[in-house]
Image 1: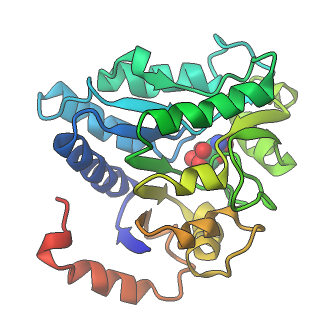
Image 2: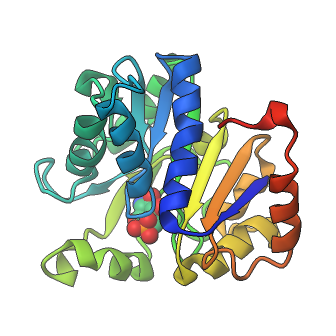
Image 3: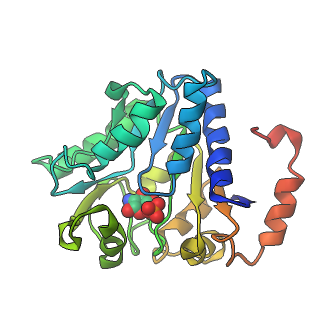
Length: 261
Ligand code: GLP
């Protein structure tokens, strides 16, 4: 894993956006793995600014969202289909026809989730997957005890995740109890994964994912198995990393050929 520790959340967004922009410039029809939640918002803002200034064109790229709630209408403002359309597709000028979100309303959930994994494979696989991490270590909506080889499927949300996401709903009881999420096995197939985290509330989860044992109790630790995982965090989210000085040193001394900026 490459660990990049930066002073502020805005720096995290900018450097992650640099990475994604470099992938899209090299391959305009890149397949982007899209995450929701607060963590990637600075990435999308930074990418949108580049698109607005004519510095980047994402119109040929396609996208696959990580997850979706089950049990709320598609047009609900907090469905991930709505969030991806509002925060990503519109501001980045992506082609809506090339962006998919798991169908949380499908009558046949098993068929829909199998079809989702098939669609990712048919698109050639994800070139770069954006990830946040939950305070309990979840990535996507793979809650603790998720199998490292899991595929896209229905999951029950942990009570702590429902509490964390209650801020997006009028009433905590309105937070759905179930979701569809790409599995850890699905996520690990992306060619490059970029996890971003900001704030002290993520410090334990980041430390467990990066330095803790491989454990289904911290689904983010599955990324230790990935050949190309980049973790970009601000100082607060890095505060529990025991090797923080080493990560700073290796990033500062990165060979030129490994730099993406
Ligand atoms: C959410 C999403 C995840 C996200 C995580 C952290 O519920 N399903 O994709 O990474 O939980 O959320 P946030 O970035 O808002 O802290």
